[in-house]
Length: 620
Image (cartoon, rainbow, N blue to C red):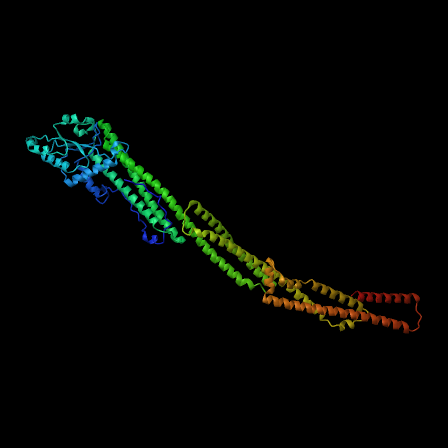
């Protein structure tokens, strides 16, 4: 029986979804060694056409109607014995029994000897009917004339020894003379038998030295047939399993692929359990046969029976075939499991790719919606920047996941290429890896642009706040009327003018340090970072706000320049009036006696004050 498991033709790409519903959880038949013999237990095939149940085979063998001891004469003629069992079989059962015995003899012959050549050997048939009747002799001879699987060289008959049978022997002489298909020799006793065949080639019931326990041989033979049946079921299971894998396709989703892998792993475990049980039973049977044969040889001091040795060889051969088949199956399963695992990894890659693709689409949609939301003040822009920082940290996990998945995809594609797995859909791994790189880079750039845009917005609102504060202080500074300066007393007017001009010049200088002009110029910028600035500064609300603030700055700056010019003019006029009044006082002053030192001192003080005021006005 050939138990080889051929996995060279295995080229399945996968299992489709229907296998989940078409295959039951325990599709594989698991053979169990029953305690009782049953017709449905196992079936023996004869010549590939007829089938013989184990129950019927057991009845045929236990009848001891015929057996093959496995011995051969010196000339190489194999022996078949019809012992004196006083058992009768029908011609049909006779054919079945001989076909089975000769079939196992051919199967279990040593292929290195001449027994296995194409030339059929000539057999010596020994018919022992010493305790039987001549009618039985007539029946068996008619059976031999009508059917024998191999050529017959000689038929040796141990004739009936009963008194009555001796008396009627002459009446059966015509039957003996009618055997023209083969030579027939009649022996009176063992001595005449031993003249044709030496005792070393005969069993003990024929006066030979070969021990043959037919009951033990029958029981072990039945167990061997059970073992063969178990191996046959395993082979059929392997064939069904391989056919199922070859005729189906791999699923396109992770869940179904995992179910297929789990189910086929269960079926593989079932087959491995069948192997384990069969090999264990075979080893137990082999040990029992050897122990029985050894004990028989020790008790009877006889040569071992060739048929027992054939049983041992048959069991060892079956165990070796099962072990070789198991190794082949393990190799096949490893290859198939590698395909399933590759398919599962590919489906997981595709599933994670779809999830990341959806996630990236949501991120880009959100960033596009938030593009115009840049805050209407420095505090709101700072708050949005803080929220975006947290969101960016969460979004970057998808970026890192995409790059990690890309590395997995590249490794998967390389594995598919090096091991020639040809998993369905593996050709799309490369484009998906490129798409992952593109999506990750695009999202990272969009997040960075959003970060810079919010920072630019915060800086812009900071500048606008400073500009508004400057304009407010300018309004307060310019709100005082010029009459206040003109109505000041002459004693402190020069100090008042000097302080007012200094404050106004400092205010104008502070306004010149504002960066609103820079923001306006950045509208025409181009380049990477300037794109964010350009978007922020050209936003409709932002542009109108900048224009309004810039207009206010221009107004305050213009009014400040006008106020400074007015103050300078008023200062010059004030100096001129003071000088004119001093000259008039000097021309019209009354004559009075004054101290020369005091008059000189007052004149010198007035000249210093007038010079200082004129110098200050000229400086402005």
